[in-house]
Image (tube, rainbow, N blue to C red):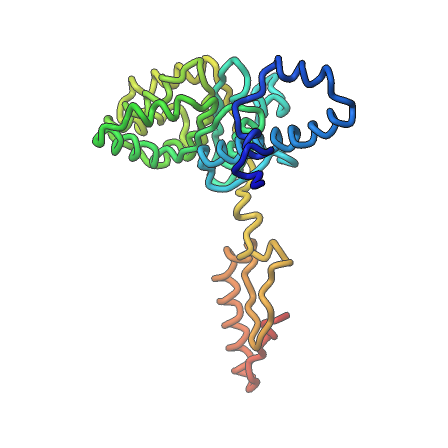
Length: 297
């Protein structure tokens, strides 16, 4: 018998969900060994469903990269008074919606933390939508012209957490501002929003091309929101391979070696060049050849 097509285990397992009456009847006559034998496929099915659900939520979130919260350094993150890092993972998964504004210069880890919160929210159940703000405004405008704006708004409305990355990096016109306002105001007190930005609240009017519209959005964010300030040096610069921060990825020496400048010496490059020319000229006046240092040292 072909068990994959006939009324064998495969055919029966694909039938509708087992009712409570059938489960009670099975529990009445099944031996402990038979009950244990049933547990294994049921546990496997539940694990597969959870994995498939998480994969589906990750695809819908559209994260640019996958980053977690484990080991995240909050040394240079200034939290609001009375607000602890342990409270952040609950954003987007609690019944009470709350907004977060990650403010700081480029490269301070705002997007990293926002994605980590999104990953944690997916693990706890609700959906997440990650958007670069300028790209989202373009997509909303296109959807409006194509007549699919309502469909796009419903898709975003299913999420418990919306992340608007690089908010204010690129200003948009009044039509784009009004479309974005629908996203923010439409989920007021119903879903959480995380903004990553390097623009102060006082300059949001230039981003939205309308001071009154910006004031309305700020008013909604401030009421249930928190401001996290990211300080310190840029992580991208401090971890840059160009400056030799990662010695495990140094290029192999083949023939002439390549020396990458250290960050602290870049600003002194002109002064060092002038000093080297002076030393070479002084040795030439004495009838000596200019001494060249080994570039690989």
